[in-house]
Image (cartoon, rainbow, N blue to C red):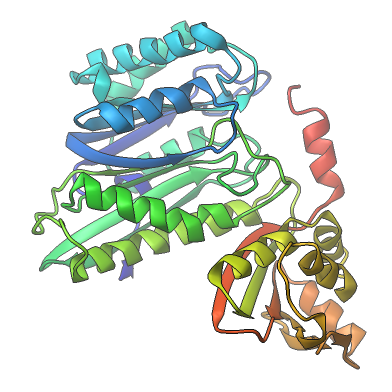
Length: 409
């Protein structure tokens, strides 16, 4: 597997762009609409928010993914979430799909819609339809075009998030790339995140759906910034088959290779979102090893990575191991606290801070040095079995409150 440039335009036949149409309040000069387009029809699979309150574009896309014979384009905006907008919100999704279909000469049923931003506001559809017409004329397949799209879907993100790889499948070079946004209102399962992955692999919709739904369990569902599950979470994978590999229709080696490639893309994007949490100064990774079951390992890792006290501890570079033990203890998993070992690890080193449930005689100075890096890992060895899981989050800072206190202004 080789990393390449291009993000969502790395795969053969995909184009993208992004521009500013004036959706965001007081955000002159910031792009707020993106388009991704395939020259040929695509298979599609997706996963969406578990929040009962689902934004209009989520409900719209769920129907398209389930019922449309194929898709060919995605139109995404930032600034307004189109959530809690009733019938008008759904009508606006349809209006945008109709406009994109006309501009791209494809059926409206082949257009997916994505939104992120402030909840409770209606979309400025007239502005956006004008934006769609401009984007249809300026689509491109260079890395710069992919970057335009990745930047246009950002809200409070501080950096755009994109990645691409190529891999050999069935004797053909297959490319897969993606972009995502997400910085706040992020919590498993799925988060205020939009993620779009494109590939030229030839695969059946059944196999694609199976891979996507399995992969998200260990990638996007394992990140948490603030404990809030969004109304707009969407993760879509589009494949157009232009790589020319024999169609993947069963769980063979080609299936496994593509699943591994998708895991690389989604893990990268998930970690980038976790590390770019609102106000964050560090990516916080929690590895649970030696658990009795995968389910329990997942539960424990999520409990620790989501703890506000642990997150504040990471921000302060304070080796307060009791907070981690406490978060493991209230996770709901039954275990023997007298058997647990804990470690801190970063590029500055690795240190054991708890052995068999009791703090070791470790150096506070060394622990602080390890916790002061911009990527920090806590490892919990439960010594109960062989199952493991990894969750990602970030530290909790003063800036998180500042950002969310005046988000609408």
